[in-house]
Image 1 (spheres, rainbow, N blue to C red):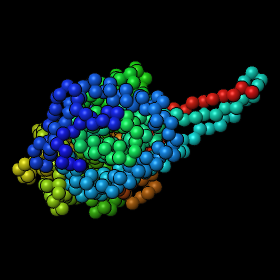
Image 2 (cartoon, rainbow, N blue to C red; image 1 turned 30 degrees about the vertical axis):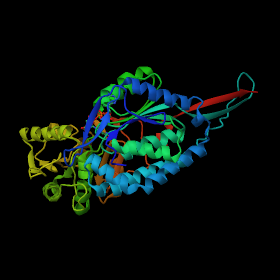
Image 3 (tube, protein in one colour; image 1 turned 90 degrees about the vertical axis):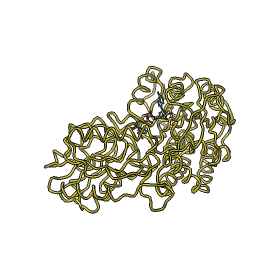
Image 4 (cartoon, rainbow, N blue to C red; image 1 turned 120 degrees about the vertical axis):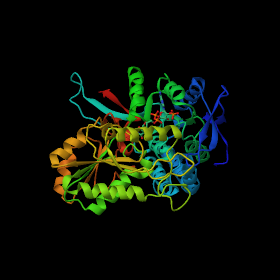
Length: 484
Ligand code: NDP
């Protein structure tokens, strides 16, 4: 699986390079060395992929398959993925530079579970029978059917390509859509491998197409394509806003899962040992490259100094290095470009007067590493407390009252998720109700699950991934009325 040096497009069941003949390199984050070459597609490749998806949707073999058959295919794909779980974990660790342990514990099992969860929905897309008072004196019989929206463009980021790919493929295919997947240029491998497994599982050619390439060329050609009915995008707020501006007037269905700057609130009565371990996990998993990263740690002033020192100690103790070394606790960032972006946030915070308590220790000589970094002495107006860094960088800010904690937490452009640490469950529920986010975790960091909706408001996007809510995003409800 990982010895194939070239990464191609999958269009109508055929692996093919773009006719344009351009390629780009994908580097291995932990070493900086070239891992593979990827075909750089053009709008012509997007046209071909959308046409293949359209043919299957508009009367192809896929369109004739009952839901139960779609569910069986998804279950078969999940079984094949499970059988190759270790291969995928290793491929992901190489592609992303993340510790192998995280792939084994989080990304691969969640991808399998997500495919199975949505497989179960495929034959349960029931409509409703709705009574009315009739029409012009005649009784009516009214029912609804739920139909797939059509061809879905699935634009996947680099921070968890297999897992987020499954979050999108599962509901799209269960609903009966056909898809064109655009992997990130920084993570082209895992999704190619998953598409190859889907072919082995028996999905008809053209149901799942993959177009590799650069975002502005391939992604934009997809999101503005007249043959695309639905867009599910996970990535930056900047690109999400651009997609909304361009696809909105075309009335495409949109799910946008964008950035975050999640608060982790430690109340006065929190069990500190539990809160500090949980906060460190929420901050440092995937090197902080997650939309849910709990990067704003808001602490009751009575515990501020203890939490600041403990988190700094936890950051300093993390072992960075080779993702395949069992002792490694944190891997590399996705690319040198991204590592520089994170370093520039750190430099700007220092210049603004924030106090760096951890983060200037040595990093491995090769690869795109950034040390886990903790800042104290941060005021809520500083850029480091407001902008998404998407790296292992946390700020610790004190508060004096619950009201102030809620105000600080909500004082953000983002509204994806938050974490609360307290022993007082009454208070936890009342504060959870006041937080303007899509998900609140109490005494644990955002436990993602296929059955729970995932997404936010404000600059964090619109719509939901996962759960029944994600499925609804790929379906239209049609009403049929018989005037009797
Ligand atoms: P982008 O938003 O640029 O990329 C996300 C996905 O969108 C990738 O597949 C990308 O392809 C594609 N894309 C890029 N431009 C367009 C476009 N014009 N139209 C359609 N699709 C496009 O994120 P970056 O990789 O540049 O990361 C930058 C920042 O975005 C991060 O620092 C972080 O703040 C945020 N981010 C948030 C994520 C989340 O989980 N919410 C995930 C990833 C990033 P390609 O990679 O080929 O450019």
